Length: 165
Image (cartoon, rainbow, N blue to C red):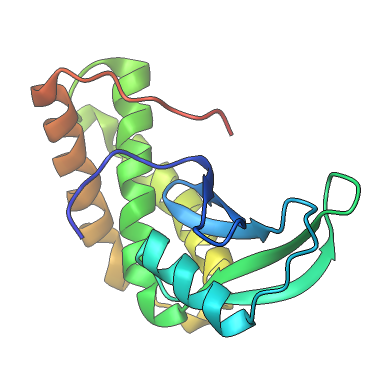
């Protein structure tokens, strides 16, 4: 997947359901309180197409609004590397928004801290246990993706929109 602006917030599916994205990762789906019934396979297919990640649905629960139902979304563990890459892009946007510069050798703490935070987030998004994925195998790819995105953002002159955590 090519680098793109980070997606945060709700996006609509053609069938009337909405999908929430955090750092370009689909995290939950809502029926918006309309009591719609759509086969799970169709929802999974549409969410996967929209987010370009294979997902599965969690159990449906009451949502925030009266009559609304929501389900959590879990990304396939086989796409862990892509989830972590998307989180690296989001961390790059945060770095540019905060510091307005490219990453240099003095920013080594940023690399490590963001990696550890994003690694935990990716584990959770994919429904994996900590021991399921070797951290060391992902660190250098993560840092390379983050630094490359910082460079791209700085060269583009775009000020990224960053959602507060």
